[in-house]
Length: 440
Image (tube, rainbow, N blue to C red):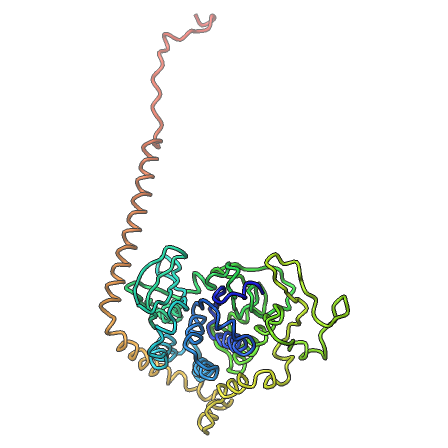
């Protein structure tokens, strides 16, 4: 493609995906394996929510094995909880903050310099802000695209992952301001730019996404992204918030690899077709009899798109290890569970039944224990949070007072202009009124 000829002329944008963030890992691994120039020559990596984590992993050079193991660890942790994400032990922000402190390299601000963009949502006005990394760490605001240019901070990633009431009730701070999940205002940064390769695990119209088999032509445009209205997207939306089994999440990673490979083959960025070998023996022949897919040559920008590349699903690949041995080995390793006897019993049917039977006895103690841990961890931030809540309540009270005052003044003005009692009519002088002739 002509837009990929010059180094640094394209960017990648990863959508927020929740527990489906492994879809992005499969996409990145496919690009790294089949077209490394797309990752090496990209000018920036944008992301919101879990997509921002994937962007950090790309610029930091994390391996696919590390990404799969860390993301799958949270999925397995939720699987072990009796109430899933509703259990008091589910603390995603605390877990992610600790992971960032433990595994981010010390020179990540240099690695991500001028290459990483994180989407944030300012609270409470809902304005979107793109945080761009800068090695110098100088904090400045650019009115173009509403960007904040500053040094990379793990706190910016925490803010981009903070979903209100799902992760807590008090938004975290970054540079003295409160921010929440960037997917709520801009799920796909720079999605309208023709030089941006967009990636999303939901069915839609982005560059790399699952191709839906539904006949629905209706789309939902929300959060600066387009979603097809279908049952598949409904299931994916639930899976992104309420985690399924590790095997289902691993299949989403494999599907990301296949969708990225379809994107590369349609644009002629791979050396040889691979997907046709998974569904048939040889690719279809064109009109002139030469093997290859039907190309769309009527592109104004000089693009050569092959729309005949098949859509391959994970169930169509009997042996994924032949397609990508490294990714398959990483997923199998990440899906491995604790082989101890007690862990096996807890995963079994009788163990789950016993856990639910004892839930009325164990849940109160677990609730008190984990809430106490949260309270102790919150103590250093209590003064700042209370001051913020006081200011928020004051501004809310002033807003209610101002609107109520305006309504009352408007009502009084209407009453003064049109009083309820009608004006009294003047008395008539009967002597001056003309009388009929017979009465006279």
